[in-house]
Amino acid sequence: MKVRTRFAPSPTGRMHVGNLRTALYAYLITRHAGGDFILRIEDTDQEREMAGAVDIINRTLSMTGLEYDEGPDKDGGVGPYVQSERVRSGIYMKYAKELVAKGEAYYCFCTPERLAGLRTKVEGSDKEITVYDKHCLSLSEEEIREKLESGIPYVIRQNNPTEGTTTFHDDIYGDITVDNSELDDMILIKSDGFPTYNFANVVDDHLMGITHVVRGNEYLSSSPKYNRLYEAFGWDIPEYIHCPLITDEEHKKLSKRSGHSSFEDLTDQGFLPEAVVNFVALLGWSPEDDSEIMSLGELTEKFDYHRMSKSPAVFDYGKLKWMNGEYIKKMDFDDFFEKALPYIKDVIKRDLDLKKIAKMVQSRIEVFPDIKDHIDFFEVLPEYDPEMYVHKKMKTTKESSLEALEKIEPVLNEQEDWSNDALYDLFRSFAEKEGLKNGQILWPLRTAVSGKQMTPGGATELMEVLGKEESIARIKTGMELLRKSI
Image 1 (cartoon, rainbow, N blue to C red):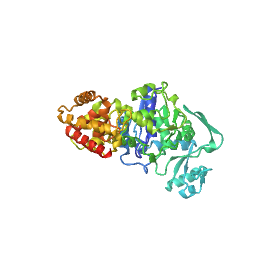
Image 2 (cartoon, one colour; image 1 turned 120 degrees about the vertical axis):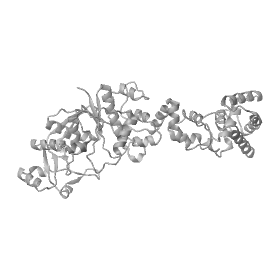
Image 3 (tube, one colour; image 1 turned 90 degrees about the vertical axis):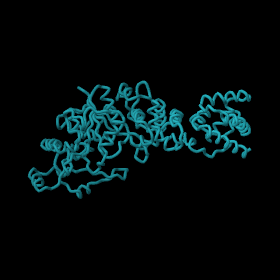
Image 4 (spheres, helix red, strand yellow; image 1 turned 90 degrees about the horizontal axis):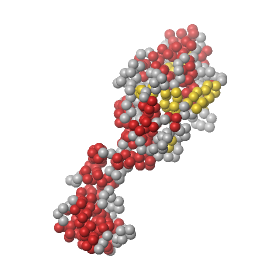
């Protein structure tokens, strides 16, 4: 049987990292097996739907390279691929009534007030749940007909057993058995005629030929209800693959408050889509060879969902930054420059060679916003402590640094070729002539022209970009600062 997986997001906002991982794993399972990957928009919860959210879904899939074979704009013969459109075709009501006819579901006319009286607190928690008491299951056919003809609002509920057990199999967690007393009679069709998420999933997955269902492990508890629906219809049950929970570094569920819970949060912070995909793939899975840096093609080749973990996956923000930095280092320079340019222009307003600045920082940043702290001195020399001229390894002191700068300044005034190579040759010859090590010249110069402890390039690279006039002006500022401090 051909493997068919689906990604079925609800258009309620930005794509959470957990949803992206679900999409990625479903995509990798399909591509690894040469199957079909389907996009289905689950917009049955009209109250939570957010304008523009479908565009966010499409943009995220496009940016991450998760191309689907069938979807709202790619009809594979089992559409429509938007649930609200499927509602209008009457699909869900048809199948819900089929269950009613079989005794596997029933009409429920209970008022909100009555349902509120059924709410009970979960033991050891402040959370309340409604456990339905099957009140409407006892209604006669005549009573049901009268209520329907009178236009009394209703829902259709699944009729689950209250005794015995139900066992289901998950490819990650194995066989799981639950007491049927825990299976509440979940709503299948809401009072507005729309199906619930749970019911629509089962119907659509069957009609679309989904063979492997990938979702978060928060749906483990609902799986027995899904299985009972499949069995009631006489349909084949798909393979279940439940992904582990994603937590923050404090082992709490990753939330919006973390500031990096969605794909767009991360791209807004300067992360590359391919780095995010690589990182997210490792949140609950690892390849046999323990590789860490992998392209989407390499992930597809290596992905074996049986190696997924049951344990919660920790979102290590530091590791993501490291991984992003590795991707930035490997970027084609022209691509890097295009992405870096807005960040550079946000800092540099002067007429400088921005490409040379970009080349200096490419191997030094982890995310694009880091660029600012690496290059801000090009625009304005910051105030700095003259103690920065002291470097034990370079054997420089404030006195030796001042002496070196005073000797080199008139030489620089006569220097016409201000390229990096020419300046380096000049300083090397000067150091040799003065009986100094290169660092005893270059350290004071770099400090004087940058005012920073760490810079993206050496003294000569910085001076080439700053130009002769600005470099000498900064060296004079450094000499004055040193004179005052000695």
